Figure 1: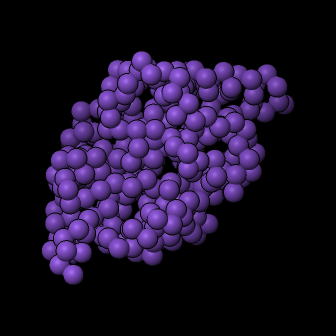
Figure 2: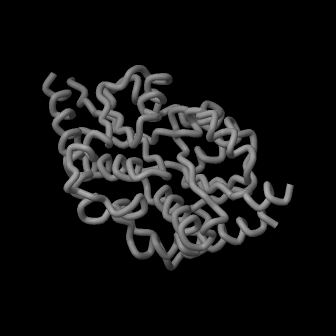
Figure 3: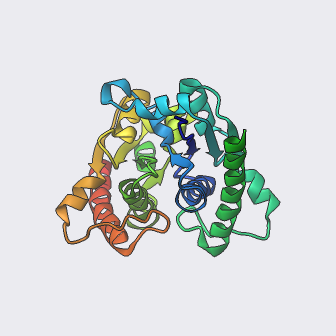
Length: 140
Length: 137
């Protein structure tokens, strides 16, 4: 029996930055709307959570070891990528929010608290790109 | 010495959970505290950056007060703060505010969050803001 492949989506989700909010919104759009059957959300901090083993949260790391993962980075710190790489192996692909912001200067998110209509449009563009990558992973 | 004390802030660190609405309550709560209720007295920092161990951030948190807000029993914010900063001055669970307000069952939607989720976040934010004042006394 062929096991259906799932792709783990890990957004940095940084609370302090607009990029974190965009990464979170893009991840939700992919998992809820664009590729709900093919993807699953993983929480970035769980990968490196202090005393994770003691608190029984090993599932995220194990999933990422056994499935392809896509990280979404809200800034140049690459927190999601580094966490996944350290505990589960290199992510399959990484998307940088800044590249999308630079590519679409016409779309101006309102704030980290509320992306507004244009910010959500930008998140949708990021999500579309990620969905295409998910499709590639399913074909390969 | 007095000048140093007057600069002290309370850092609000919500967990970064995006799989369930309980993480959203924590994040929304943190924004209400930092932007409205305790504006100027509190600040946000990214949990993933703390998890990564960014030295400037860790050093800054050690010099200030820190409040963790968590959305599930794994308590990523609390545990990561303890592991990397070595202290947490106060902690809140978003599930507690849900239990205390059975009539405000949060909507499952995460983006955007629903009206009941916003109301719960405001209620929790009032408690967190009160704790901010206590910690700065």
